[in-house]
Length: 110
Image 1 (cartoon, rainbow, N blue to C red):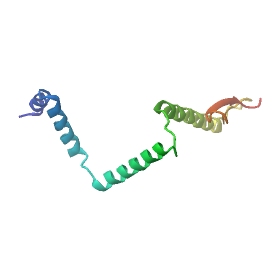
Image 2 (cartoon, helix red, strand yellow):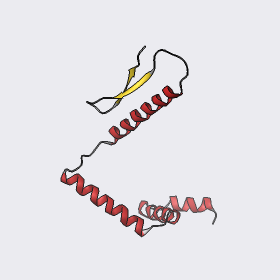
Image 3 (cartoon, rainbow, N blue to C red):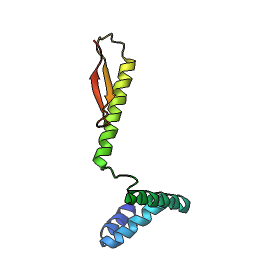
Image 4 (tube, rainbow, N blue to C red):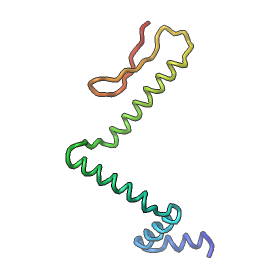
């Protein structure tokens, strides 16, 4: 049986059997590491406990990605500012808003 025939055969299986095939194939590419799995499980349990106790607050994924994008933009602005030798009287600066904690561009002196 060649690869194309094997794939055609696998695709024709019921969903449950395809899932089993996929899990086994993925497991063969990335074999389980019990010590690593146990460490991640412990971290997950600890984080869930912290979340349920109110020690930490959940943050929506969209907000996390927005913070990353804003922080990345701020870093790029700083890098461009430091590398700029244009002699312009105005520089693009960024400042973190105390209210939102987000970086915002501000105009430099000029």
